[in-house]
Length: 385
Ligand code: MG
Image (cartoon, rainbow, N blue to C red; front, side, top):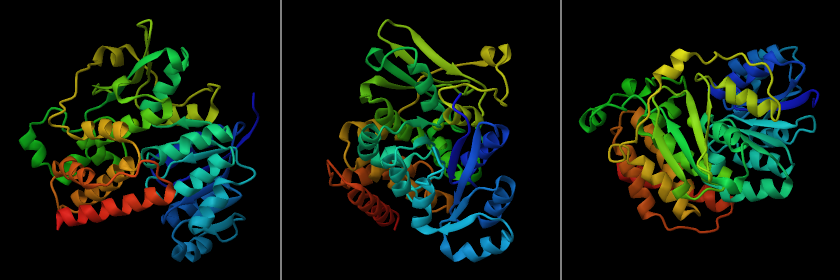
C-alpha cells in the first residue's frame, strides 16, 4: 500500500470538487488534502478549509482574498491567489495528485505545470484535452505523469482497457444518457426552456455540463477526450445511448470480447478510483442491483437531432486548434442560451458555423490555443449580434 498521499483539488467548490472532498474525507489514512483552489466562492472555500485544514488555499479572484482571509480568521492555511496561486498549488512539494475539477481554461497552465512536475492528474476538467490534448499528452509521456480520467465514461474505458493491451483494442463504446431531450421531437427541442434543459434525468451536475448534456455537446467533447487519452482515431469511437447510466462505457478487443464497467451513477465512484489507483478501496456509493440490470436499454443516437456529436468527430479528424475553437464557441453559446438570447438548438448550428470560419493552426502552442479560443468567443458574439 502506497501510504498517505497528498492531494490538491483545483475547483474544490464545484460539483466534482465537492464530491472529491467527500471521497478524501472518507479515506483519511490514505488521502491528505494539501491544497484547495476555487474561482470566487470564498465562503464555501472557507468552510472547506476549516473542515480539512489544508496547507494552502487559493482564490483565483484576487479581489475577494481579503474576504476569504477574514472568514478564515485563525486558520493556518497559506492564502494564495490568481494564476500564480494555482501554479504554486499544482506544483506543491507535498502534493502527489492534482484533482483538476474546475471547468474552463483558468487552470490550464497550472495543470500543465503539474504534468511537467510529474504529478498524477485526476482529470475532470475537459478543456485540458479538448483544447490542449496535443500539448498535454506528449508532455505527460515525457514527464511520466499519469493522467487518470475522472469523467465517468473515460474512467470506465480506462478501467475496461486494463483487460488487454492498448494494441488489442478494436473500438470503444462511449455511453450517453441522451439528456433530457432524448425522446423529444426536433420542434420540442427548439422550444426548450432553460429550466427544461437543466433538468438532467440521471446525473446531478453544474449548469454548463447539464446544457452540454442536453445538446449532447458533452459527448462531442468526450469523443475528443477519448481520442487523446487512449490514442484512438474517430472510427474506433462509437456513441451509444444508454439512458439509465449504469454502464459507463465499454471496450471491445480484437478477439470480439467486450468489457464494460458499470455501477449506479455516482461521481464519487470514478473520483475514488482515480485517487486510489491502482488499488480499489472500500467505496461509499450505492451498489448495483438486479433491478438496475433489468432496467438497462441501449440505442443509437439521433445524429440529425444531436448535430453536436458529428462536431466531436470532426475535431478528432481535424486536430490542431479546432478543439479549442469548438470548446470556446460552445462555452459562449451555452452562456448565451442560459441568458435566453439563443435557442438550445442554435448551439450546435452556430458552433459549426464558427468551426467552418476558423483558419486551422495545425501545431498550436498554448498561446495559439488560447488565442483561437478568444477568436471563437468573438465569432460567437458576431453570430448572435
Ligand atoms: Mg461524462
